[in-house]
Length: 448
Image (cartoon, rainbow, N blue to C red; front, side, top):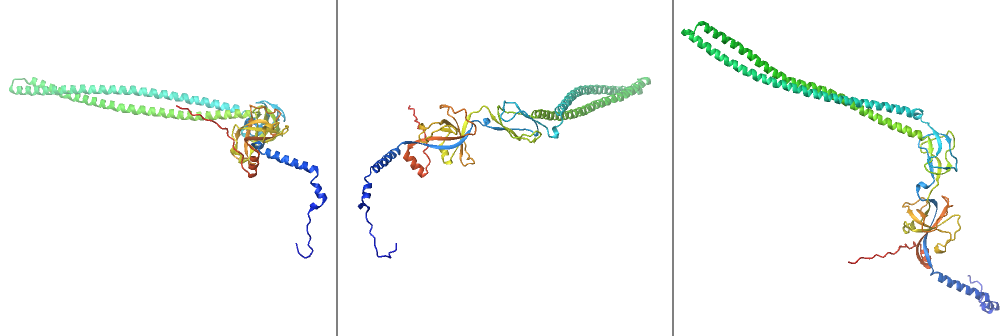
């Protein structure tokens, strides 16, 4: 304030006025002061009242099991819509036909595709049986060849034994002939000596010479027989080698034919399996033209509507809501509150559209809430920045309303520790998390 003027004003007290003096004597001001004092005392006392800490969340009604939630009916194969058998809002049982589609792929348009595949499969099976019979025949033929080979070898072995005996006999005869030659030669020399001395006639000497010549001729014949026996022995040994080679060639050829037949049999067996697979696939595909309900429920919405409209594999056709389901609530909690909740913890739930009076800190005074129990906690954060918690009805409390619809809104409160109101106010102002409530358990130790 600028000090320009020399005029100075002096503030006077308002107590000098009579009106101001009468203000404090009015009775309604005294009543107001008493009310303020009473409310202050009541508020101070209320600060020490018990308060139940809680974690609140918002969510919606859902089902407890995944297979009980609304789901879409899809087509396994591509096709063209030909006929609808249901309309929106109809109730269908499991296995009821929803719609019929026709084939659009050229590989499956043959109306006799399944029958033709079956005929091909039967023909291949007969061919497989023929190869099996051929393998059995060749196996028998190989066994017969082996038996004949064994007999032939035994025959050749016997012939070798016979040749050895014949060689032994001829060798003994040759030795005997040589002995006879020696004796004939001695007799001839003796007769010739006696003839020179005049003791023997010339005729006797000539007889001895003739006998000597006969023995010499006989020894040549016997040597020929001995050599012939040796040759027969050699031929018998060669015969064994020939028999072994001949029958080995026959067995090899039969085994080659057998292995060829086995290869063809295995190849035909593979073709039969392939045709059986195709036959089964074609048969199953024929049953997929009629799209059926996987479970009993209500047809909510038809996603494909036009007759003659083509659809691809996996295209949703309609949505169905199962008729039998276990109700539950999925709620979302803040990340800071996630460590404070666990499976099996009790929760209070109230639903949109149901009259409810809720005092979050005093659950006993709440009205219209229902008991729940946490059955699942998601470990990954959702798109809304919170964690998903699944709540099922608490069997120890009143049942949830049957009129609840899947998808309707719900709010939840998870109850924690009991604290004074002043502590809860102080905690909220400071941004501290609620106290984690744990039930105390006593353990007893056995003493020996």
